[in-house]
Image 1 (cartoon, one colour):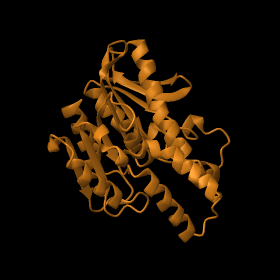
Image 2 (spheres, helix red, strand yellow):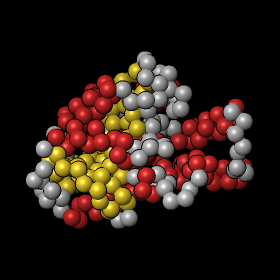
Image 3 (tube, one colour):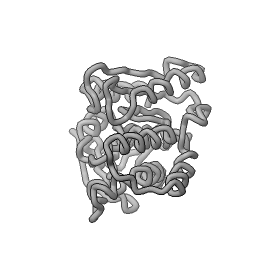
Image 4 (cartoon, one colour):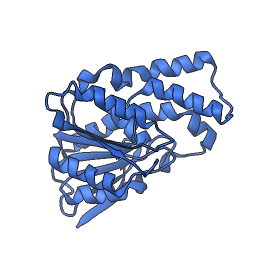
Length: 254
């Protein structure tokens, strides 16, 4: 059986899943990060499957999402995308530290995964935290700067009013640059990484994650530890295959 409880860890609302009876045991940790406009409870199927396999699974709400929504408007949340990403990367460290202090996780067995924005946050976390031992990104991109400019072009094409001055945009780019994994691929350090992306994704470019995979594979000592699954039909939606392969990846490498 699996127990799923609601908790707040250092002001971060989370869902916490584990095998019933093992609430105080030191278990490997899996953090799963939701996508933009989503929330923690939308990924409970991942939590349930991974908890069944013996992991302690934590699903946090990101800034301006779920229980952290407050009165933020849809437009403000959209324009705060990169603030949310950077805060999400920091939240991962906060959660790992807090759970380690509680003595209920194995700090040598920490995994991170996420969908869309959650995948983007996962890439950023890999650039910062060597204690992450395995990761899966679903519909994400590690090209922070390129994706930021791609988002702007999409807004212009859709005639969405753009609220940033050139100076403000330059500041955003300077803030996100240190988290751009494409400029420091050596930080992957041969860690197991699975990427899943649909070729017909119109929200996060398939070409960016695919290009990264080709370049990153060349720096892996064990190329089997980095894999890419290209989906033909799902668009910007995680398929059942992606879900099953995610669980298999962590069962193998974490």
